[in-house]
Figure 1 (cartoon, one colour):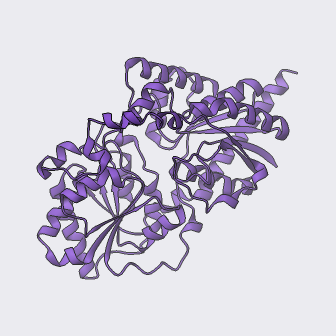
Figure 2: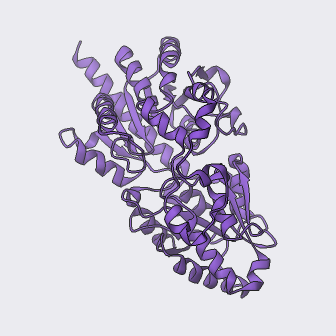
Figure 3: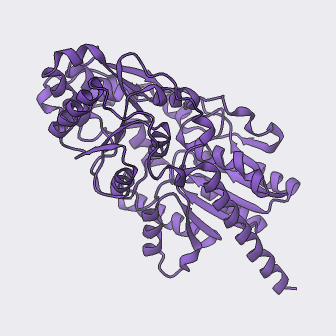
Length: 454
């Protein structure tokens, strides 16, 4: 069986969406003739844990490299905590004094002072301290296992720089997988033009050296094709995120007793819940009965950033913050909910994104309230036939949609457990099959080049 080494910072016990794409590939690759291995980082004390999928690979097929964590250093400077002057209410979880200013103050979830400081100090990101030990561990792993292919996945983009070093030393065919754009990513904070230029130079180094560049949306691929028009188009591949059908077995679980709206993921930058919460408040003000029978579950590590909005709108009895939960529990909440909330925001660049959660939302077979701009996610949801789509910055439209949905629920007319029309396009097994075919191609090309040199 051929061997592939994944270079992924996120891997169990570290949880979150960054680990899920790799885990799905790892699970199904053996069916297509590839044996997966992982080079990852020692678990960070600053990130959420999800130990449920730990057994997916035997530990002897996983190498963990120590990371020089910049947060260890930053946390020593306790005096800096007193200098958090911008958006103080968000950082400390205090309510906004004037709710009328909510839209202006929370149009975007601001980056914390630590996030800004890290962007100033560390390029391409604050995982750069993974490279020294990661290189040593990776090269030792390659020497022992003789891999046929190397796949690095970002973010963090440091993973690509680590893979670049392994590629340059060993010549292993390399696929650079971008879950997000890099230098053209409008959601990333670049402190200066120099920072942006340096990131762009590093991206060019990666793109030109990798044998294939893989993205998870078609518009990401187009972005790379436009920027690197001198490179062959077939160097750039696209495999979307997806869902694992094993996470969604039949029969469907019973729904919550109360009408439940759930959001799973994170809020940051333009992906803000302020318009949804303003719309929810307006809807509840006109429907006292609904106020007693609706709950909103927020699953993710964002309570301190979002609680000021909830408190200012007096939604504390309706909205529950559950924090980060392991993937299995998050999926269970999706499946028991009546309505799933998707928020993308209208900032430039959002039209190119497929939020990773959208595919599991579709697999949960629940209606989706989508606050999304024009773009590929909106078109995907239109094709699905299960979404209520509203302008991402129109709380009045949110209130109207909630009224329509809740009335349908009360009249037993809300569609539940209905398979979206395009669901099977995103089955993890089929997506992994596409990846295996890409790796087979890269291996055939490498062997052909090797023969020509003899």
